[in-house]
Structures are given as structure tokens and as C-alpha cells.
Length: 135
Image (tube, rainbow, N blue to C red; front, side, top):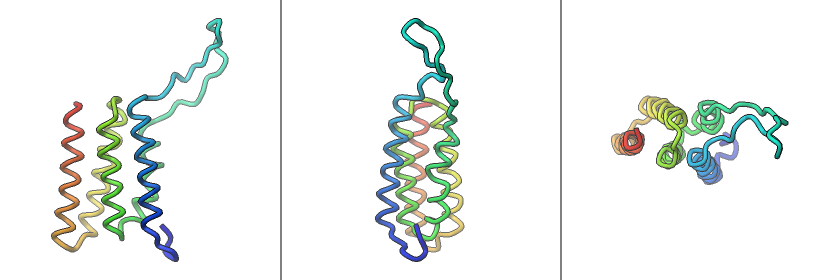
């Protein structure tokens, strides 16, 4: 989100794409870092991915800019909930749940209206329910 343009619709669309990508990763997981040829010989050793770094890359910049827009922040929480519902790997579920906590803490300090605070809590409870259902 740009202070000059401030287009929340584009940000929300991007959040939907990021959430969908995280859902795919959460459902499939990462491939092995070792790639072998048809004879079983190691041909490539790729970089090892970390779920926490991927979640940070998806949401940290958006989170900072979205703190002034409750609708964008809530969309991030919705994307996190959907990704947690798909995630089979505990590491990804933990990373998503931790990011949700950070966002909610930030929102509690920013939100001034009771109705907005209630929406934040509602979304966070849904995330924690989804998180708890797969533990």
C-alpha cells in the first residue's frame, strides 16, 4: 500500500494470492532438498526453505502498511486462517499462528472502535480454533 495511492483493493487481491500460495504449500509441503537422477545419483542440492521466513516475507511489509486500514488487516487474518486450515506441517501452522498473534497485538494498539476490536477478536478466535483443530 502506497501513501500516495492507498489502494486497499489491490492489497486485498495480493493478500488473497499470498494466502492461496501458503495454502498450497501447507497442503503439499516442500520437496526434498536433494534431487536425484533416474539412477539415484545426487544431481542438485537446493536451498532449504523455512516456513517462518516464507510467512514473514508474505505478510511483514503488508502488516506494517495495513495497520492503518482495518479491512486490509482483517483480510490478512482471513488468509492466515485459510492457510492454517490447509497446513499439514506443524512448522507452517506454528509460523502462521505466531504471525496472527503479532498482527492482533498490533491491531489492538491501533483500533479505536469497539466494533473493530470485536472483529479482530472474532477473526483471531477463528484462527486459534483452526490451529487447535489440527494439533
